[in-house]
Image 1 (cartoon, rainbow, N blue to C red):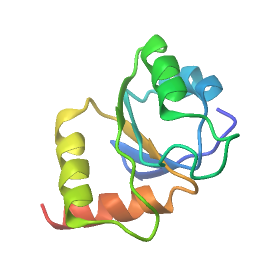
Image 2 (tube, one colour):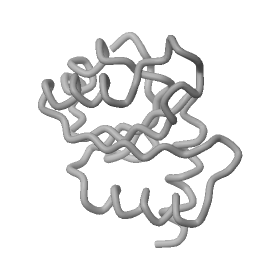
Image 3 (tube, one colour):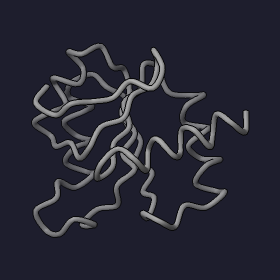
Length: 114
C-alpha cells in the first residue's frame, strides 16, 4: 500500500487520505473494514469522494462506513457512532481522514468511554 498506516491496536489502524486505488492494497494488508471520517470535499474538488472509495472498498471485499467528522468540531454523537462502528464492523478496521489524527482521537475517546 503506497499510503502508510499506523496500527493503534492489532484490530485498529489509522491512515491519511486514501483513494479508490488504495482499497485493494488495504484488503491485501488484511483489513476487513474501512471507516471514512473525512467529509467529502474538505480538501477541495480533487479529494476522492466517499462514494468512489466505498465502491472500490466493496469491490475489494471490504465493509465500509462513511462517518464524516468535521476537523476541530467532533461531537459526543460522533464518538458514540464511531464506537458503534468499532463494535459492529469486522476487524481489523482501518479508519482514515486527512492525516489520521481525527481518527486517532475518535478511537482514543471511544475506547476510553468503553
